[in-house]
Image 1 (cartoon, one colour):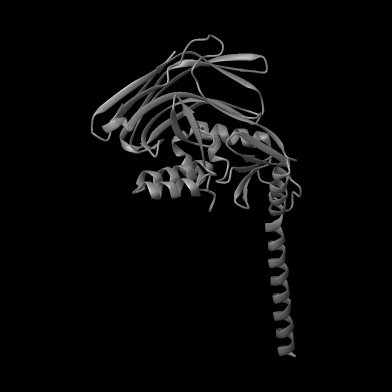
Image 2 (image 1 turned 60 degrees about the vertical axis):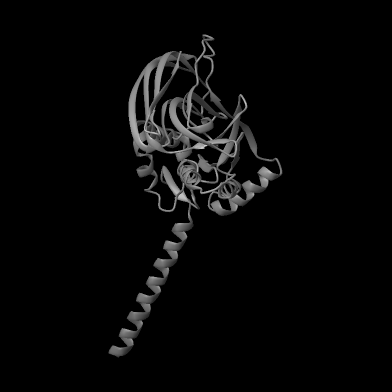
Length: 325
């Protein structure tokens, strides 16, 4: 009798274990009710407010984007994926290796041609928003799948909120068939303040044999449909290979910003001072986003600005240029 009792006790424990594991498995497949979760390789934001609050946190912690991203195991953002791509480019031994890298990573970059100079850029040149899209340019915000390309932002309601994998497949098909919503992605290197008509200089300082290396400074704006817009400035160091200006780490880079910008949204306009000074060693750029808007049309202007862009370059010489208005 004792053996029979022990047998049935063991069976009950086994069944209980099975039910528990089955429930755990079902729970893992359910959509998360958290404000932010990581599912099927991409970030899922429950609401636009959660999306905006995360961007606010990142804006206030721009030196810690890698640490923030690392909390999501196996997540690779568009920003960190492009940074890794830049590192590979800088270490490429010959033109053949460089060509292979460019061919294999077309989903990460775009090309911009200004005054017969072609520059390699990330899909969106703002490190805040690029931290939230995955390497394939995907994110979910308030039940909408979004896909970022060089010039378009595609959007579609989740086909099945309980099955993100099938929704991703349906979204891909909708994009190919032209059935997904789309809006333009606009990346601007600011040349004029739209309100005052004043000119803003985009500066560069070339050096080395045949001027194949340069320090560059710029003020930028980004617009991703109605989802996101931003304004900021950056210093970068680049090298020219295969006719393309690509990122190249150097001894030190510095970005110093002094000025005031304006932000106009929903009929209100505010003027905000900006003061910033940072130097980095063994880096190819420093970027600072001043401000952003989410889910609302914003107009950013520059009241006045004087930015110093500086490097201790590969030849150990210091070089500068300025962007100002």
